[in-house]
Amino acid sequence: MAKNKTLSGTFLVGGAVRDQLLGRAVSDRDWVVVGRTPEEMLAEGYTQVGKDFPVFLHPESHEEYALARTERKTASGHLGFECHAGIDVSLEDDLERRDLTVNALAQDASGHIIDPYGGENDLRAGVLRHVSPAFAEDPLRILRVARFAAQLGFTVAPSTMVLMQQMSEAGALAELPAERVWQEFHKALACADAPAFLRVLKDANALSPWFSELSAIADRWESDGETALQRFGSLALECEASDLARLATRVKVPKRFERFAIAACELHATLTGWRVAEAHTLLGALQQAGALQSGAKERRDDFLLLLSMLADSYGEFQSGALARLALNLSAIGAEQAIRVALDAGRDKPEGRELGVAIAQVRVDHIHKAQLGEA
Image (cartoon, rainbow, N blue to C red; front, side, top):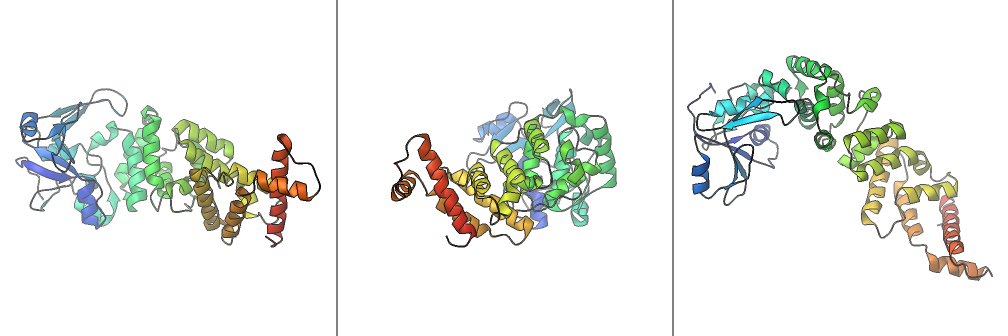
């Protein structure tokens, strides 16, 4: 549709319009209101929640309605912007400040698409293209482009890639807070083509300063598993544990993700070769992986996710048998260890000896399982 600065009313914008045109499920809907004042919104029962610019919650749906706004860069960093919202701001003005043409789309109440920057053509071509030079004002957009490549399977327009390279070489990414970096990375990990995130960042010379440790594997990483946790863990199969630990600290990766990845890195050889592993070594690996913590559901669930990920990565792998073994081992406690000792004519183990006795019963059970006898 041709550019039109006279439109007013309420418009569905951004990702909801994009996903609708792509035939994808729409999860969140964002709205832009043109030609209205905050006072008019409040009079109609909306609740204002925005401080830097007027954002309102609908009185019934509680979806967000933002007054059309423009932005002006005033300081370094992701948040260094001054916003202006007023009845003089057009829909076209609002869409122009967005990152990509495929996100600079709007839909009116009649279902008509407003597309002043060629977003529909880029959707059909599968291209991620920046809307305006203002793209360079926000370094987070480099990560967003990489994430959209993983999410949509799109390629990056050459002009946009050049702009991203220039931003990266200028050190723009160092301005970002770690929390926002992890947020974009986490969203990318939830995508089936998560490796595209690293490939795009490498092409944009943007792996530094946040993902430097992944530079060597960016082109060969294959994302095993079906969850973000498993895909992050699959990085560990290509990395050194120390590299992954540095990355996790820098990006402030949640402890659950870090623990899962370190377990994958350090334990995969023992777990995938469990039938021939030394029994004490296997027992230690299962304990480190949280497999024997019967009272900690998250740790047990993560252990099963780890086995599933390793099975995907290493092909034939008896993860089901190992999962059953871990379940049986977790059920071996003080009562069984005491009974075994007494049956063997030994004194009842207590204190530290009881812990040693439990471990020995578990090791004996592992030996039987490795021989197919348990």
